Image (cartoon, rainbow, N blue to C red; front, side):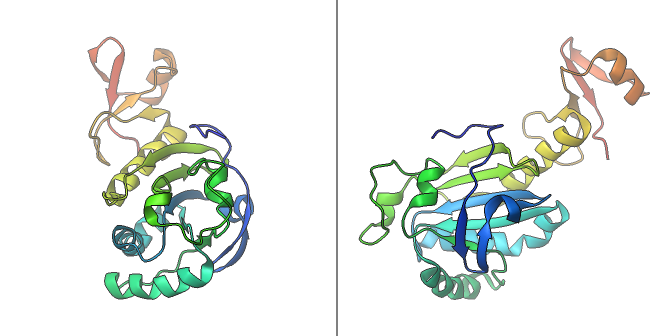
Length: 219
């Protein structure tokens, strides 16, 4: 099944390092970042999981839950967590999903259906496509996806930037221009009429082109 932006994220039940979950119930009314890993005890992924742990207060400020998934079982995850905490100096207090039967990575179209039904004997290279990030809204719909090669560590500052942007769109009906950073000018969505925009932005906007309406970022 191919997953696209605005699709409802698949639901599943799974064992995690923090207990069993039903994914939709676990999401609740939060935003979610789900990020996947091809195998436990891999170097780039170790740095990533540690990086997320150091940013937990930033995600919490954004009402965002973090959850990881790796193509191994929870027992291995718990052992790996000790290495991650030693490397990063931060506690891994978000759940890691066990997927030893490859069911969830297939559900999310990160591995083909004919990949077998066990993680045993598989190398990280066999699972190289399990390197995706899904940003999910409280409505359980996918808002953004990114997929990285195994050799490139993910930029979680950029993921926070994307999260800020999509939350602004949801709350304020604005878009963000190229290389936007929090606090910079934003773009009024084309779906908002000039009349409605005038009611919201009393000081007007800047139009460098007829179809671009720039305003200060709403707070």
